Image 1 (tube, rainbow, N blue to C red):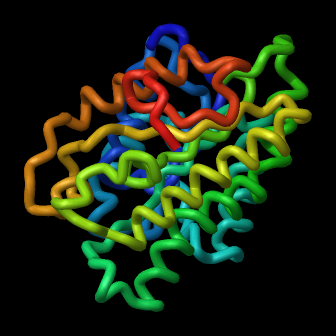
Image 2: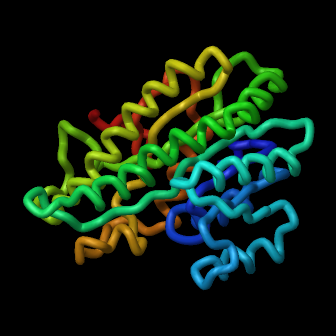
Length: 259
């Protein structure tokens, strides 16, 4: 992880699970970000207490209210981050916020499909749009001409469940809305990689593995991967991302996941 050196990073869904794990390990880097923005829906709520405790010990950690399905909330968060960064840009945006609903093909509903898609697919689209000016600024201010997470990057937290080829763990949980939203997120990532390459911004989708979190346990089976191992693996992957990885779908070990 020593290779990951970013001046600033923002993580959505940062109050628990994978998001909180990423925040913790970024703070423990030999060269932690000067600014680390932890975004979540309710910063003062019960589910954000651990994040609040971290922020009380780390002046570089700023908790930002952000509801990824609310355009006004997204714009307010972008404005707040811009105030802190002043003349510098945002190097790393990790679109981690997401939801899953245990559902079946025959019982999937319009309401659930819409809610999951709004959070898991449209949310990352809108958040990336709002922070694009700051990402551009970071890329323009970088001395390097090569794409990297240290320069400017959008990382979308996807899932093996969105792989159309594999349809991973279908028998354990169909979760149709979740699978569709992540497959769509993968296409969004590919589109972003094509649209933002000209600005010097790297875009990739990451599968964290089947992790022992509240969301990971939803099927009633204990996932094989601990949170710390998953996050450490993903940060190692972020260190190594370059031009060749722009628009790719990788897992926590850096292996290519089939579309």
